[in-house]
Amino acid sequence: MKHKLSGRQSETVNPLKEYYLVYVQNDGMVKLNFTQPKQILEIYQFLCVGKRVPIESLCSLFNHETQNGSDLRLYNELLRATVRAIKSSFTKRMIQNIQANRNAQLLDHTHQINDTTDFDLITWLIIKDNDHADAH
Image 1 (cartoon, rainbow, N blue to C red):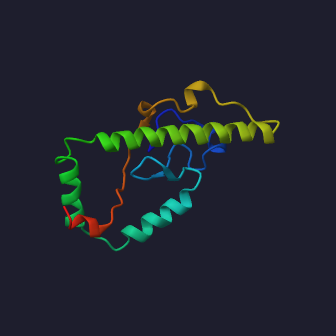
Image 2 (cartoon, rainbow, N blue to C red):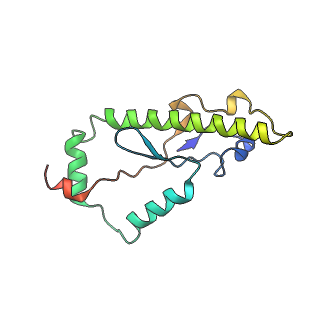
């Protein structure tokens, strides 16, 4: 995800500046937050390197579960959970920076995370077990 209003000041809180990588589980629990981009990228690399085409059985499962993309309620809720997690971690890191550094400044409200509309979804990866795709 890309934060639309992020400025250079947010670099002290998020090393990827305006970009946020988050690994959120299907139940809305965050497995890895934006503070762990290296681990998320390693998982993506492990799952995606060498893959040239989508796994058809998993695409069919996704289409079945979302009624061919017309029912994305689960994924919209996961996006909301992701933004809540980003906001919480962002705020904690900002406070930690202020407490640890006398020269740290509180970010202007317009550069803080407030809502899902503050982001552009760049891409996502849905991780599913291929064994479950055959059952549907």
